Image (cartoon, rainbow, N blue to C red; front, top):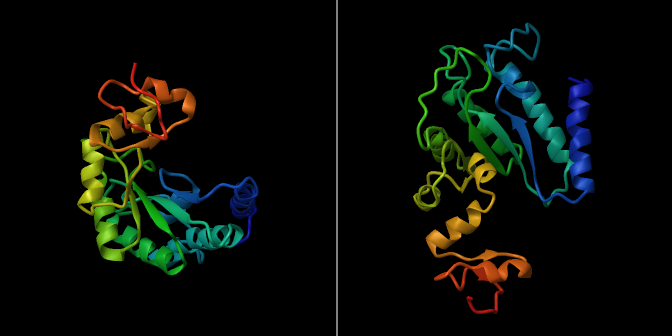
Length: 220
């Protein structure tokens, strides 16, 4: 399938490679184009790109293959998905596992597991880590490195997810929009260290003299 959208994915990937980005993530979630192909709620095509699960996977996998080919071989390429539409008869976790297996076979380096965003009929039970079970199931069944998201706002919560093997990485977005220094506070609470530019070294809080790697000044 060749069209302007397909070419746009490839062009964006080449721009990312040109400016030296270390990784790219294909966005196949939240009702955007690739999710529309995946979900039977949105995909009403009657050609080779619609109908069966195999057909609905076709275009997203073609895009992934093209992005992978356009990005340097030594740098990771992953994909973000909505693991469920939260609507009966829509895209669901079982189909997401099939997609993840297909991506893994194509050299996908990680899968970023979100949910929803396609239908106004979605019914979501919100709560801390509400999307985590989807990431955990995909990781367990496929072995593909997995990023978990979904109201994961506390450092201890994120640490436990990784430590117990529920996911390989936790994505923190809205928490960092509210508090851009979230990683610093998380490191302080967990007894870890972070890299910071020298101009920030004097702001280490009392009791955290070793928070910043490379800092050589005492607290004031």
